Amino acid sequence: MRTLWRLGYHAKLLKTNHFRTAASNTSFPAVWMLLAQRSGTIPGLFVVVKKNTLFTMPKTVEDETNPELYLPHPGVRGMTLLNREAFKRTLVVPALKVKKEIVHRVLKSLKQSVLQRPGLKRVLEDPEDEDSRFVILDPHKVPEFSLGESEQQVLKELDVPAEVCKYHLELSYENFKSEEILRAVLPEGQEVTSGFSRVGHIAHLNLRDHQLPYRHLIGQVIMDKNPGVTCVVNKTNIIDSTYRNFEMEVLAGENNLVTKVKENNISYELDFSKVYWNPRLSTEHSRIVGLLRAGDVLFDVFAGIGPFAIPAAKRQCRVFANDLNPDSYSWLLHNCQLNKVHTKVKAFNMDGRAFLWGPVREELSKELPLLGEEQKTAFHIVMNLPALAVEFLDVFRHLLVGEPCSPAGLPTVHCYGFSKHSDPARDIQERAEAVLGTSLAGRCSTFLVRNVAPNKEMLCLSFQIPADVLYKRPCPDEAKPASKRLCTSQDCSEEKVLS
Image 1 (spheres, rainbow, N blue to C red):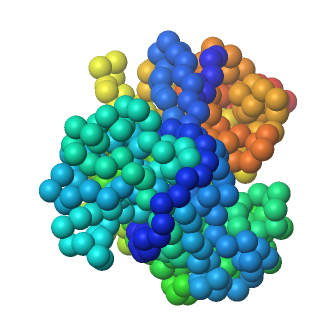
Image 2: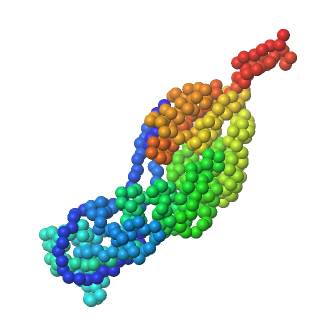
Image 3: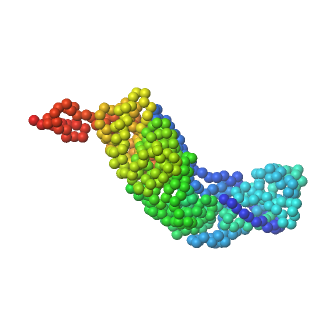
């Protein structure tokens, strides 16, 4: 086995005297992102690179160079109720006065020195001269309010005085980014909330204990700075393993948790307070569905509202989808209708074991014996309940009776699990082997789906169910009269004949 690891702003400038001061140098702003990916290969199995995304506040290089420059007024420290007026601050920035006819030439020639902070205008009107404009320069790039020789030469060629003006730039709440506001409000040295999950119009946070006194302010800031977000919630307990939902508190906005989402070009509707939905699993849903071909059969044991089932049905697969949560089942039916695949998906509201012992066993018992050597149909069983799915694998032990089908027809299981082990791939494989009662060495693959928490990984273990596990061996004395035989074990490995 190998493991596959894988905002708008507005500002007003007031002209004052010429001035010289010092400023540090920096590079252009850059959006900060965290992305980790590794890959591996397994002969005969799939090879995938996984990318996870979530919403984060932008972080720029200039902020690290001079973090005080774009911070709100220090008086906001400790604020728990949002007061937007308290965030006003005035900065001193350099600027050039140029004729409006050559503004674009100046911008192009001095692009390395012009202000690059997102949302702030680089060109402003001169209230005293309608024929002139002010080109705002980056205080980090113009040390001591003085241009370098090369910049001065460019301006000389454009017939623009190389005299740098000192301006007062008035910043308000609208001009600061979310992370800057929260960094200024929360106690110094404490972690600032920098990411959230977006579910339609809902922003979902997982706040730490030290952030809870500021939770309503944090919620309001997140909603203010992210267009389209009209509700911010915070998870208040862990996910319930039975129905996979959790309690939440509305921090800001409307108390409307029925929302619409779009994943991999498919639309879903759901009540976020009653069903499980995780936007971080979008790539994983796509990965599994990408393994399916038209005509294949998918059994989704813990289907939720259908992120595996519905795209599989759109690929012309036959789908059997189940979920114990009555609300998930209802939204599954709704989304099948919404996406016009209701005729291709058979939905069930059962316990996972009952679903495997009932509809899954019935369908496999009917279909597998009919498979020929040239049969292209593949059977996939998805078990996405990471907290418990491994424990359900025992259901496959002697689930079917009779002669095994061809090896190519054996169903493939995609079983999800969590691990805190130092070697999570080995951990989930060994746990699965213990439940199945057989070794999976050389006939399984493990894919790292995502890091759930420090030292806690979510993985997917994929394998074809071994024939000696899936099939129950027929009794060797079936030809004897019933009065003369008695099988006492499940697989008839032992028998007692009545004398």
